[in-house]
Length: 475
Image (cartoon, rainbow, N blue to C red; front, side, top):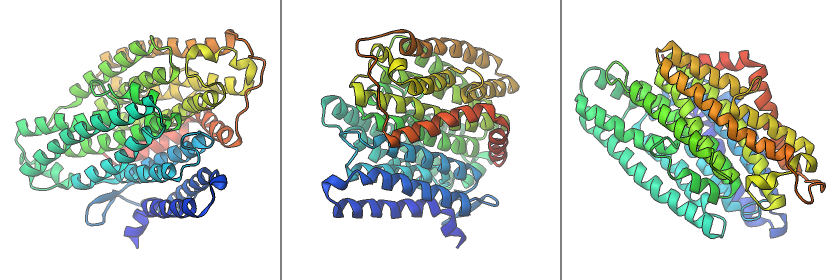
């Protein structure tokens, strides 16, 4: 029974896929607007069942050692379910995907792959989980029938396949020398000197290619701006949040368990990649005029901030990473939610076309104010404390130079977030007196995310205590 409770979220997601397919086949075209609500309610039920019945008492290996049922997997499962549920609400009414049952089926299957990624304790299981999460995303990115979306899906597929093959070669090197694919047995073999240092270093670099692609880390970030711009915006929101969180879930587990710092000092490699990633992301974001491309480069920069916690390679470093990932997920979902709502009404993603939004919908503009200030790291929003925590983790681990680079980058990033808010509040355009409506489903999703942004900043103690407990199980 314990094995089944450990994979309760996955069982629920499989059932949800079957229900969506059945309902999609049996209802008429006019009634297919029920599909996003069905998907959202399914995620809510699975979320609640996970909280009630799938909380682990202690870390344990399940299903023949293929999965690890621990707090890290539990937290990331909740993150993925939340992100997918909000995405289902954002997709409602989106012309190309809103009433397509196959879209919601792919969304649930991708979420299933992500939940397995967070719990994988075996390299074979991990690779299968990554592909289960990624292949639906390739299709979802190209679901809009226009050149940009087709290009986005095809480009994402090509780059994803290439980096997956490189990562798989790194896995094969580890298996070939250690004789096991079990992540925790691998750690023992490496600690005992069972894998030559040259092979260990080579496999580490190869594995980082695959993980770096998932989190859009420089130099594996090149797909993100084009895919983010071309994909349907609800898909972009999911890509930039849940998919990125999935990449960090495996990065934390594999680097800390398979490649112990005592054997391979990878912290400096991660620190340099972190500095380059946040710097390049922020500097290129300064020049963007399209809000989706700006948020794409912003997403790259945030990956650099999160990597600061990874470079710290400490209990507090992982705590700061987890807090940042949760805060970033809620904040970026809100940011893309506003983009979704505005595009549906205006048909433009250009920043200049947001002029007069504060007059068209004051509540929406106010929500954008909170969201973009959080992304920029202004107190008392969640984004401020997330940045403070990763900078403190760097200082605690002796990476003062990295913390300084992070602070300077945060100042640079604040500029382009304020540019958007300046256009929203200070600029005007013809017709800005016409009210801009927000649908009920998207209003609910936006309200939840914006409240989350504020709560994560003003009620810090419970979230910090929770993430600290999770991080403690890894050390």
